[in-house]
Length: 318
Image (cartoon, rainbow, N blue to C red; front, side, top):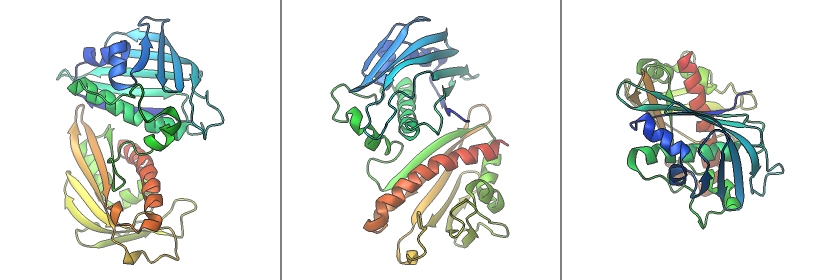
């Protein structure tokens, strides 16, 4: 079963990234201010998030190359979790790869953190936020760690982290991923209707993506076969931008969604080092969705884009 993985590419050099992972000063600048590091193999990394605490034994330190921890103790103080110690026995691995420009690719694996874990959604949302904080810290010197005494205590982690990687309100969702495939391949994955349907889960054979025109096909995802992928293409800028409008989470046949204002989904592509591609997706306009279903549509699409970016990456890399 697949464990949690995330990659990022930063302009910082490997020494800077390595220091951010192996020192108390570094970890407290992007992860949590409540931390203590005994920076040697066999030493301990201890972190706290209010009443949530975790301890990791340092298994491997390869300067500017790899940091690996084994979780030995954990208590995740979230009310909805029955098992609050699922991290115990999992491994956290940070792999650093330099490029010819002096930049760094970071490949993170939380080996053992799998979707069957109760805490998977909570923890994967947390990792996306804190790895983004790490990225920001090594490039600018300022991250967004958990702050001691923060009003966002551990028992509110579930609520707060569900909004990570979105704007500060609930009007838009923003997510990004680095895909190990050239830009033209990722573009084809998005702009060819049949390929789009393959990773999205819709039958789009015979459809065309043309600015100003509608594309429609039956959803092929189990349990949703009675609804349709139904969009109006907004803009097509080859290998740069693809956007469309649709009605988010339009799954109730009794609802007349045509009376609603649609949201706007925009995919933006940029080159990434190593012949990879940075893909960003933004869905905006949830403030125009009727109040009775706005939060459910936002919540479901927020979770949905997380899964679909992974689907895009796997499809484009094949």
